[in-house]
Length: 115
Image 1 (cartoon, rainbow, N blue to C red):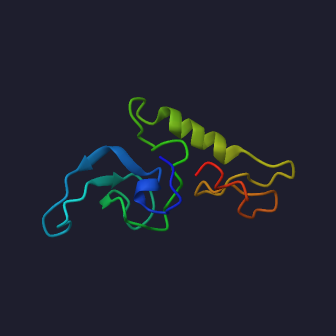
Image 2: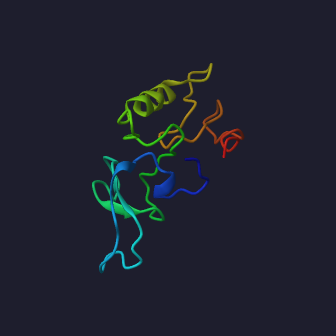
């Protein structure tokens, strides 16, 4: 799923496999809630709705980290490769949140091409 919004529905840590129906006092609209699989951030290991936002957002460019049916093995490997990619001057090609960077560390003009 590709999105230009920086919310849970576009985050790689919003679980594809662990979700529940909303309702009750915490989610009266009944929106689907999925578990946040981030290791940091205010919603780590909590159920969130698609519209929730936080500073632990990481773009879901290769799928969720628990993407079925491979249980995230392929997407975690793709994110590891992305994190290790460097420009010729040894500057990182991607920020920790998945944003493509130019060789000066600025947000690349090509970051939104696929969105």
